[in-house]
Length: 153
Image (cartoon, rainbow, N blue to C red; front, side, top):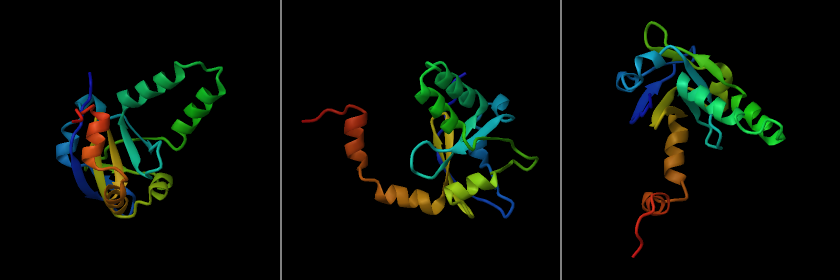
């Protein structure tokens, strides 16, 4: 089953490091994915976190470790990719606890943005997300032309 998530949602992190998953986002996750989620840092320099449904997380691990394990870069990438990863789940109030180490790494204190990104959810501090959108060196038009192969006249 392929997972496709969409939308951008605001939430807040409480003093214990928990956030309430917005109902419209939670509804997009297949029922069987609600019990096994993985949270980790992003692989780029954005300082956001990434929430993976279990099937997506394990698909990514399988993809990494199906490469030549005798190549030291494969092993190093696998270790770095998994560093800091933590299984997370919903409590009875639909809240998810973010481990302190990941909260600190992402600079998350209170206000967050949950950005659906195809088959996973990015979790940003609201300030970092707004900064990212304001300071990206590309325009949406420019990226559309390059990434989507738009016609150039």
